[in-house]
Figure (cartoon, rainbow, N blue to C red):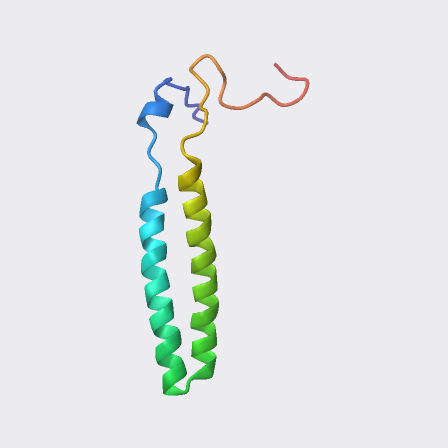
Length: 91
């Protein structure tokens, strides 16, 4: 079992994948809209429904990502604070 100690530089060196997730969600919205429209025009209602459901999921993910981006950075504890609270009763 490997226990990794805090270096104390996590708040300054931490990187978030939110921007990448944002662009992947935008890409997903473009493709699911195109797929929904294409399958609906072609008369494949089942596939159009599947693409439409994916469109809803990708849009929800996009909204969540935008919300997290707007929240900005969050507080990160320093090196003197353990990464997890010890279980009740044990030191």
